[in-house]
Length: 354
Ligand code: NAP
Ligand code: ZN
Image: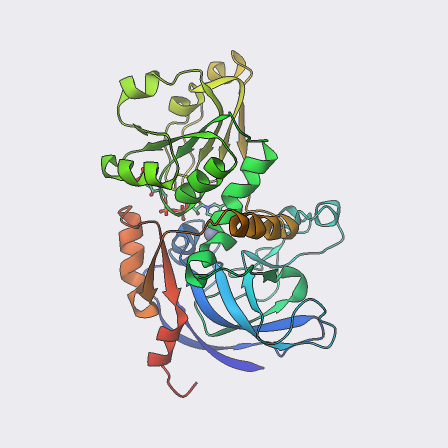
């Protein structure tokens, strides 16, 4: 076993604090990674506060991990010591069901194991990337293409793939009009990626102060979602809308903006359901309301390579782990431009000897 140090929530109400635990010894097909950076996803916050009613405590969040390979098992073929690698939201799945066979491990018919809070379907708890080291099966380790700013690439492992996968699946391409709802971690990646795919991107936000950023990130327009006239001007015009909002809201406001046969895909995962949409808003224009979960391992590698090719990384604020509780509060106030990333060097202050 390997001793490590991380930050954990011990219950839904207490702030995260230092927590020592053990990683498994490196098996034949395992890679041990010294974590350099870990992004802070809104799912971390939902989890540590038990907003989805499925949290196992202690909870060590973090599924946007970039690190350096420190050790590899005998059977590992694709990685060697010192390689820079990434780990996203999954660390295991059955690898033989029809979804896994298609490289869609996130839809594993037996349930994938999450990087943290993993054994929703039984087994031991898993601890995520707010920690010094992690041991991961080779299949779930990603190659990080050479990028200068590694910290800014960490959030690609969740925010990047969660927005890339639906944009690809629903065939977003040059000339499409694409809406992005909410400008946070996922939203800012959705704008960059859809713009790189050639789409005409429109941001919907409640925050008037985000207009300049939206345009800089690649959106052509920003619409204040609280202004009904501004919304109405876009009625029946979108091919695709990606909704990243982390709280329940009225979906009809956006469904009405889709053209005939358009699709709106939900990736935001609020703690309470959205009000049910009006069925006539769907049937009269044959519109589709859909959902999407992260992305498979092959597609995650494709996304990392796409981002390297298009010079896309995340806009981040680098924080020491000691600021994580304050970062959560700021995230709840939509006061993050546009992803917090933890510099794991800061853990050394907690335990210089480890
Ligand atoms: P985030 O950085 O907090 O961004 C969410 C954005 O939603 C905010 O910046 C804000 O944008 C908007 N928003 C927040 N509260 C709102 C409210 N009450 N009403 C309307 N808009 C609100 O969060 P994130 O990390 O991007 O994650 C977004 C959601 O996706 C979370 O629920 C997360 O758990 C989920 N998620 C899902 C997957 C998946 O696989 N499907 C993967 C990762 C995360 P504006 O200020 O622009 O309005
Ligand atoms: Zn996430």
